[in-house]
Length: 171
Image (cartoon, rainbow, N blue to C red; front, top):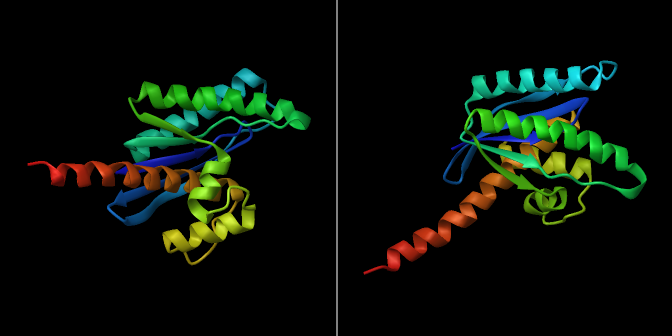
């Protein structure tokens, strides 16, 4: 299964595609979509949508895993901007018939490191190790997107195992 992880942002959106075959994971492609911050909001959203559609058409994911909205009381505007970007991202996935799963940041961190409050450097090291990468993914938006994809793959494996176990016990 090809899973596309998305770290939504209005200025920088990270993406990372992995191919999951059983316990084996391969990084297919990872990068960022950069949108100039000086453009009007509607133009920025349009640009993000167009660039993401191009990524979707190139990578053809079976599943899109997106970080859920979070906000901090001291940075409410960041949550609003992220919400705009997420809306465009979810729309693009729906337009292409791609199933979407969402994961909270703490859930992603816990899935990869066992600690829901792991810092960026710890996450990057965990991703490099898990994916067999020689270098730590940069920028952090790429690492976050790969982490979001890996979290989805891990949760899918956990969901499949009980079904298989139950199926083998049937008469």
